[in-house]
Amino acid sequence: MKKDEPPVFIKYLTEGPSRPLHILLAEASFINQKVAVHSLEKQGYRISIADNSKSTLSALKRERFDLVLMDIGMSKMNGLEVAASIRKKEKITGTHIPIIAITACDLKGDRERCLEAGLDDYITKPIKPEELIKTVNRIIQNNQKDLPSQT
Image 1 (cartoon, rainbow, N blue to C red):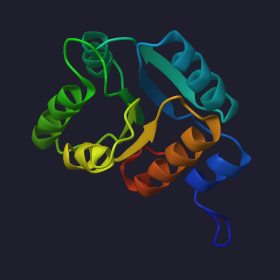
Image 2 (spheres, helix red, strand yellow):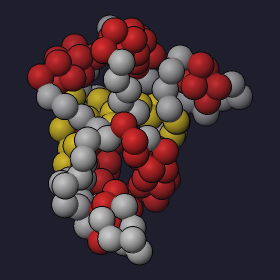
Image 3 (cartoon, rainbow, N blue to C red):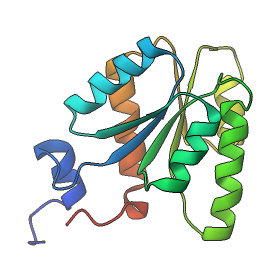
Image 4 (cartoon, rainbow, N blue to C red):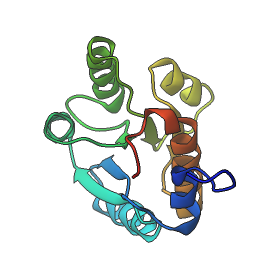
């Protein structure tokens, strides 16, 4: 990298990806999937979809993701339980994957509950594309050191 050249990650956000970041969207609602995928792909991100907790955990075992968007209201095992499982594994591996909660609830204390559960941030449904992109980009920038090399 040249002295005046921004880090490759910043170039990705402003000039397009040298290696698109891979996001796992853990969301059961087809409408929310469609909104999120459309918004994120326009930014150059690669998206994989998991529509329940079991497929979310399976995807995380099979593939490397840079970020997870997690529906908190998934059935059987909710998003907070899935996040707890991910964080438990990370204590052993020493890794960290950013997780953004997606929830239909916007009650006082919900954001804090998600952050206390180990999630990195929180957005509400219905998914608003501008809020989604702003949150994803902020979390990626905050976790830049944990991302694989963009070269």
